[in-house]
Length: 367
Length: 220
Ligand code: SF4
Ligand code: SF4
Image (cartoon, rainbow over all chains, first blue to last red; front, side):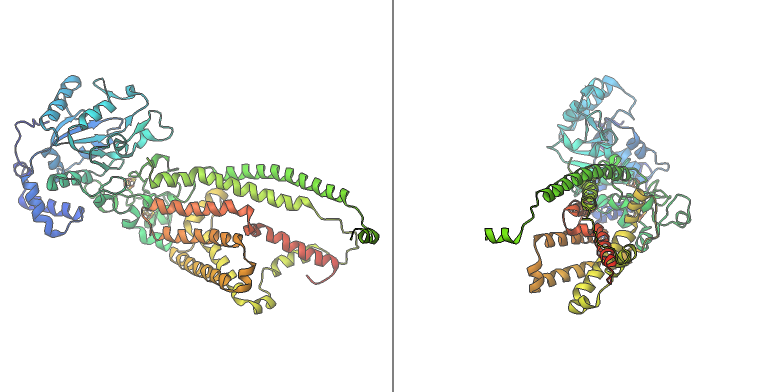
């Protein structure tokens, strides 16, 4: 945790100090530009802006979370420029990573807020419990209070991970803690949802790079996610897509189709309904991604993915127990049908009983 | 939070359960009503058997008949094309097989998505042509009531929305998939209360016609 007061280095200076060559830096700028779907002509502008960027103060709040998001960000094995960006930002408060705890840590948060009022970025991972403030507290402060208080002076809020973005696992039915997302509480500041369980590290650094470069936030989709990373579905960018179109599917994890790398739809792949960058950015520094390693997408970057039926059920299968419901329906149908049948028979018998034989004389009388 | 995913989860969850209940209970009740009502005892001496002619008529009435074919070939051919097309889309699109497999426990080979896609286009075009024919043909228009148009819509929407979902035309995908499933729920709910019931009653009606003819010793 560097001290934001004394640190005035620009990003360019700090990268050079850490041994990043100009060439490596420009390569990063090019990747960033292409990731953000910007034309190559923008690269020099990005490089210049990033070169001059001052360290932004970042306050990281962790609420009802599993630390998976922080793990995702810090587990990169080889040092990458994304990591250096993280080294460069002034992470003034992150209670999982910082040594201080309790009041000492809270003092650092308050100091950072005070000094950078109106300019700092708040990153949140984890959802906020509304049922009982005591369900999750830090230094005796409830998550709700801490979020409101910290966001008051923020330039922007980045909700990292599906819990902060949409409620995530804590929000899964029956949602015992009354967990909600950041955007359900914070209405007066820009909130960017970087969803995923966990999100791709490059995507988080991409959003930060965007903020550093342009001083603002990227264009967002309906769910508040940066369009450049979440604009296309896994299915649309999946290299197994031709197999889907041809109707070639793996049906178990070890059948011929699985060995040949066919589409995983029948094994529950949620790629068609999931918007994320896995298929292009990949994981572990571009090594692979879930579908490439033979497992269907779980849909982790979408709201309520925990409640969307079994991970191994194809998307087309409704959630309820259909066979049981058909059975129940048939039993109910037989009961109602039998009752209706009896009524109809009675009506019929009644009609027969009431039937009066009419003679020609009768007809002549009435007409 | 109300998002397309919430909509999809509702459509795949509670809404599907409701539609399924209406569909199953409605069909069982209607079939039982027909069967339980019974027929007046026929006291005349039978002049032939009922069973064979009954079964035969289920088949023969399913095949085109020369007279009606000559009179309105378009209705006959169009009817076959779209019924078969609908069944191909329903039964041989792999995501549908996956659903039926989860219910029935059996599965069968599917068709390539490109083939199903082409069949869907032909089916939709046929349905549209038949609707135009129904509206422009004075006799057919006279014979058509609101229910006929409602049933046409209920049959057309699942194919059209399925086509849009497959081509991922409306974004985001959970929205268009949800609309597709909802259109099928619409079809399921209408089923027991409209002439869509013919899907289940046609064998009964045809068998009965054949059996009666057989009993009277006339050609079935
Ligand atoms: S593996 Fe998943 S994402 Fe890839 S084509 Fe198949 S269904 Fe789509
Ligand atoms: S492939 Fe799907 S489930 Fe896996 S990380 Fe990517 S979006 Fe999440």
